[in-house]
Length: 525
Image (tube, rainbow, N blue to C red):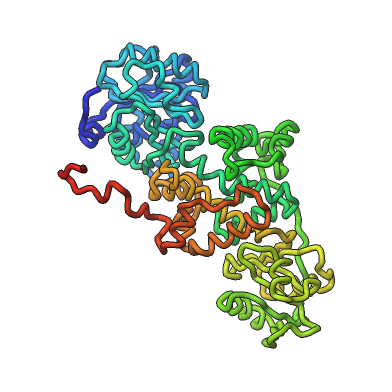
């Protein structure tokens, strides 16, 4: 395939064929038709094509009713849909063919071999696979340079992200051209590697995998972890809510495939929790029960006891000065006595706010009485949900007094088992560390990692941006503390994080590369 100007190719695409008219195929066809392309709908079943066209028309009418689309544009999009009887026939006018058939490597290889024989040389071939190697699918093609992955997310018209995945032999100009076409459709492209999970599913292992480890260790129940993820980290959906929405039959496969695909990389290692639950049929919403129960599709959140607010308590705080002030203010505003003594009075309960260590370790290292000490996670700034860590040596009455004093602030309180670091810190450290590992391996550019996580995973900010906001040194402290306390290599800090923390560089920047030292037009001896 000859070298082509990427922007000119993207602007010149007029007709695209979508093969496979299931959920993903319909969504992709709707998006392209709405953007002004002629879209050929192809499937081996004629009734499936008719169903897809009717579905797209209903979705467009709904968009008009909601004011998201004009009636004229919707009518034009419907008129741009053309049913095709033979998926590999009559391809002379097609500039692009996108496959959205079932995830079977042999089926896709056979389809693209037939398409290559039937298409003119100028036609670009693309797969919407979410789990198979793009290079493996293209391995039987005579001209793999015109083939790449275009991974849309479901529902394609609403999910603005598209992963552009070049195979090992994709022409150099084609990923940029495909990205330009994605922008023409009104979506946001990211360049993703042809590795297990591509970019977004790989980056998403940080949150879900660590949440499963927290559950496996008995630190907290799914509802508690989800509440902390939402209220402290600002996620729209907790990890166990997401597992139930996706379905454990899908999520378990992704967890295992990405871990084994990266040769057992410890940062991606899932616990055994999901295999047993999958065998038990606890798939999530689709089966009526997963990490939650569902009645008529509605999640049933288990009741959790609320601590009784108490102001008849004297509190003594051991924390970083800024964190101490942030915790002290709401306690005093609630009428709780906070001691300013140099050491905790005998009648006071002690609050510690550690980064990267347990409340028990924080108490022992500071010479504080562990039987009167509880941990409060400072990561969220104490502005929302307060997470209290309980260690085995805590006196229950002292613990109830401490929790009551915190509840008096009016903030919701979640009580969990003390661990090598607070729950939110463990979740965020894993999110940031996995993203840093992706950047370190040069699998994706920092900007694409952040964009992919924001748009594809719904994070409030990209993981590298997030790490910078919290502070690379603080993230490094949390990970090193976890690594030291557990000895588990999944917590070893990425060199990308450690180096940038030491040099004072942002996690979001690549920095100087060897190629930057080569003067253009000058030969290197």
